[in-house]
Length: 194
Image 1 (tube, helix red, strand yellow):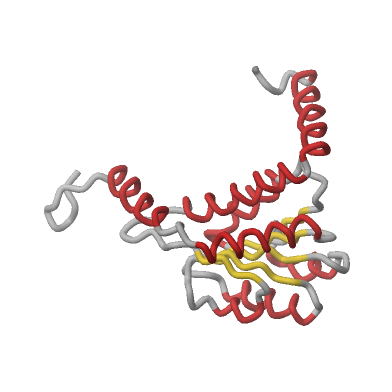
Image 2 (tube, helix red, strand yellow):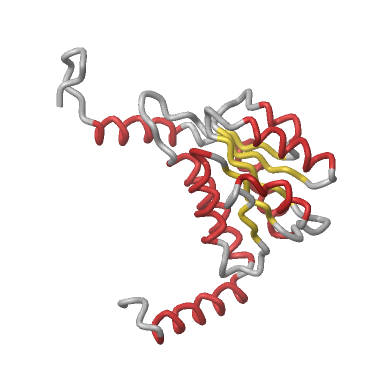
């Protein structure tokens, strides 16, 4: 395929190349320390409110769905943006907010983070922008490398999958039992082909 400037381009090659370059930037000792603290906070939280607007919305939904089999209470705060503050008020004491802010991020993410910090809830921020304004309200901040020259959510998914897998391991007795019950139910309902 020819680009507008006459140079041959291949979107698949670009996405693979530039995403791989960004993933190579993850080898950071500080990230490992932050990651451990984030997982500890999530494991012991009364509830996790997941916040993701616009380009982060589906990531928030994915995170919530993947944690359903665990004993962790996860609430997607952005199912209906009009009611985000109503949902925040229902979170129990000791809850945390997991805010996803991909550049360009939504101003409401900053307002929610500020509001939750004022209520005493810890905020964990996952962003790809080192100057994200929500940082000043977050207890922990994970900054993923930005994928240059193409759009990719892969760095966010990598961090989220690592968190999810760690939480599955830490809650394995409960989670494995739940997964078995879910699998049996889906099979009985002819919902899955194994």
